[in-house]
Image (cartoon, rainbow, N blue to C red):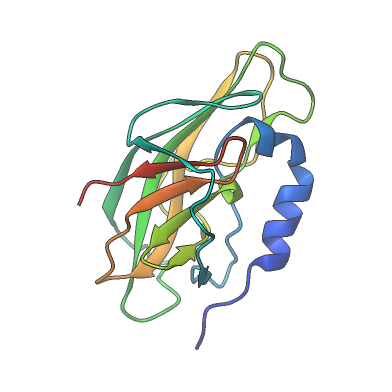
Length: 173
């Protein structure tokens, strides 16, 4: 069974949180059936590369990827959709600046995982507490884990933020 498409879910998340793209992090974009969406990765033009743990200022606040966990255990109710896949999760925080408006927020769908020439979108949360779609008041933050499903043998190189500016956190090898 192939991986289900999340294009429509991704578009819905982006439309719902259009202002969030200008602000900060995180996303959803998972489906109840699981399986991360694998697609060719965008070209690395105009992407700021920073080390894991570094906060990046955005148009409406800031975002940071603190750490990641390659040992996320499947649960009785949440198994990988593709045999041989594993779950990997990232601890992410998005913060609104002092001039946040009603469209400022975070959503897991603003992140994707870079593995070689491919990009993987987030799946439904496995690691808790999960980051959820959140509208942020001025000077407020939301933090949680964003889960991806990837082939067990793969080693991700970057987690990327689709916001402004586009940012990539380099992952340790």
